Length: 238
Length: 238
DNA sequence: TATCTTCTGTCAAATTCATGTCATCCCTGT
DNA sequence: ACAGGGATGACATGAATTTGACAGAAGATA
Figure 1: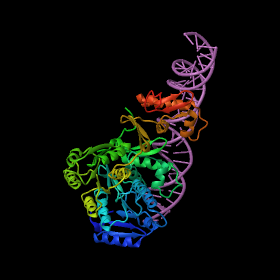
Figure 2: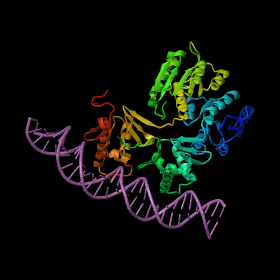
Figure 3: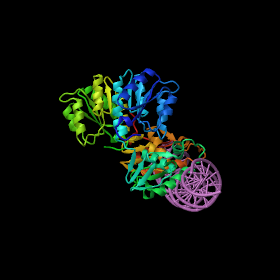
Figure 4: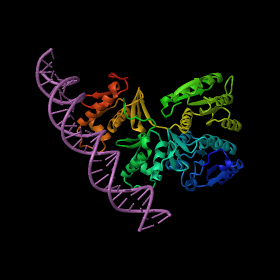
């Protein structure tokens, strides 16, 4: 994922089953210097939606799997959950638009729409999401370098293992929200339903150890699971 | 500028010279719990665009100064340059839309547009400007953060246990409705029919203790069980 | 109003149950 | 085979829940 607004460094995934649309829009985006990738079916879209993609233009009506479903799946995968999505739709029914936005779309365009408008939206969305959002998460004295798969505390590298890294990253990305062990397993241990919940505990323990004093931000929610909070002591009343 | 998706903490500035539009949209936004501020002219808009405003819904056609101009000025002031803006326009000419996006708009809606769509866009824009959505229940000074498994009174965390939390949440979700102890057991203690009804009492007691003065809203319905009411002493119905 | 009956509030002790922790085993890639 | 990370099961610990007894409140009866 790129870090400056240099179109030649940016990858756009274009998903639509109408080849004409894909070709025309692709042409205009290429004109602007973007790297364009094309997909014509839902499955293809999911395959090509790698973390290297900076933005997805997604048609709602697709064979095999509709845009909403694709969006949902992308949002549930850690590597793709933050990729901006622009919905494209022939329907202009209100409910569809609302549903699209609720699923986390960054824009919802109703066909017919000119390629120029699409390009304008692509730029606008990229400007506000891909660009100024550096690929690092900063919380107090903790820094998570997403691209580098490492994290540091007060500048000192923590030497996290992959699992530990994904664990903090996920928790920090969703501040305050409590997750059950099961949820964490499903998100971070993508494949495994064959993994004990105790496993999560073990990793949380190791993580906390490495986090040192910062560990207080990883709270246990008894009966539920764990959560990350920025302010400590939000658990006890005064 | 607020940091959690708690509508009651979020301020929206609504700018349009058509009073009807402002009123209607305002109503829907308030319905969602947002704090709405209104402006009917460009100058008024600039005055009310303080750093405390989290998002601006801005009509293009305005007396005194058009939306583009306002946008430019906001973007050039340090305190306001990052406030997300949603443009509203009667024109649907492409160029306008492109210009709007180039100026840094976060969305561009073409009238006529339903209030619900505006609300959906407001939420979407807020969500991606770093504010994570979390479902919350608000009743007077009590806030229940469903995703976070915690509740606070006047902003102070109550430190509820899981059972207590689920108890208030359930009662608050069904205002005025009285539940028997048995019903509560079946709902909250999913598995157990082997639990004494006295157990419920105990938890209600602990809950009331933590709720302090708010406890008066958790009423005992003699011979039945418990219920939550928003107004105290609500013996008479409407 | 006086009395009886039933239901609820409360408390502390007993028990259950979730989590923290550790030692060990397993797997994967070198 | 070895090293490093990951998974697991057994325990200890302590928090949360449950319970039973009893006092007190609310209703019912007359």
